[in-house]
Image (cartoon, rainbow, N blue to C red; front, side, top):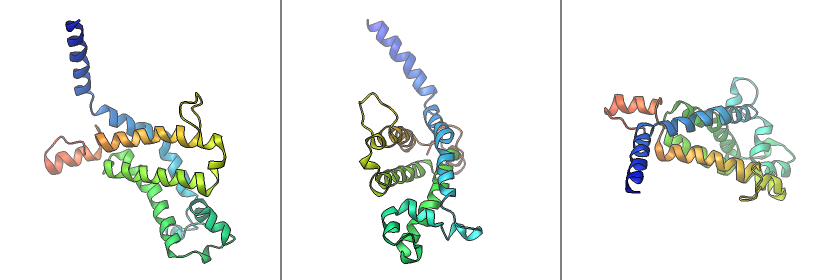
Length: 190
């Protein structure tokens, strides 16, 4: 039994050591394959007209981020303040920039933390701002044999990929790895 345990431990310790950078690389790949275009498409709906649209968000952007406040002012953006504008602009930029940083592996841990915060705020807005909390199928439940609820099920997988990146860094084939080697002369995965 001891030999079998030793063999098992030796084999999987070697696999873990050799492929340690693969897990975060796969997390970034899955994020790119499943969520990059989701976030970018969502961000595109928030842009206003023309080049200045990155500074003057669409009415829909305010409705997505501040649904109850927009309803209260009958969708008249001019009745909202600088705070609302700043949150909408920052959220829109974050929806473009943070996913890109995750995918290319630059400042990955910080970008993944930012994405975790973004997804938490997005989920709370979906549940309370847009009324998803009233729909059991939107919120979902864990351990219920139904894996397709939007909030608890899907976003748990999003969080798993992002938490992996926060803990492990960008992994192999990342700008973090290149920068750490160039600037610090290390093999850190930042």
